[in-house]
Length: 194
Image (cartoon, rainbow, N blue to C red; front, side):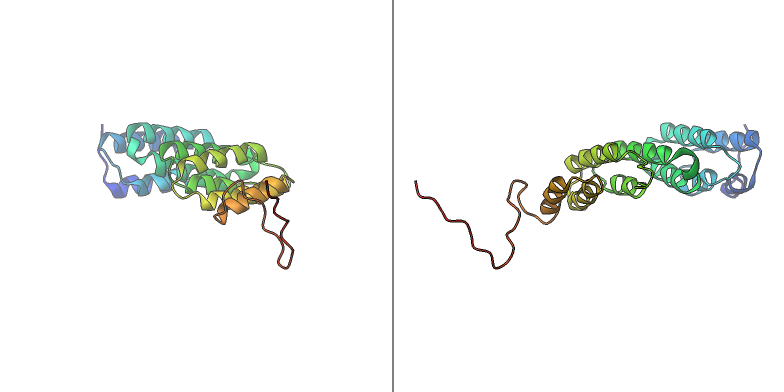
């Protein structure tokens, strides 16, 4: 198998429109142990490739170099979110945000970025599945405050004001079962003695 310089790999990934050429250079890059993510980003943004071809390259790269999986999945998600959103309704983007979250469960970015994919006019991706995904993230992320804020917003969009307020209180640091704050100037309820 022929070897390529990193510059030749970059050039092929960014400008070639021949799938067979791109595939051969990709295979050579893997065989040469090229682990720099930058040339592969160019590959993912190559407009001559179909979504299935981009997925093929991304999945192969992630399996070959598992330590790059998180970055690869985030890049795939962003590519699909921007370039193919009209066609696949963000399904591929959310799919890869979920895979990135599996690769590094404690990172908040995949959960937050998936929320950015939501289109309220079309309910795409489905709001309830997005809420479930972000709720899983709150159990895994070290500091879930940003996820609580997003959940509050998502529940508000879903019309569930009670859950929206519950997650807003969590984001603000109140215990989850604490009653909502009383309006200022209101009289506290009388204490009953037992």
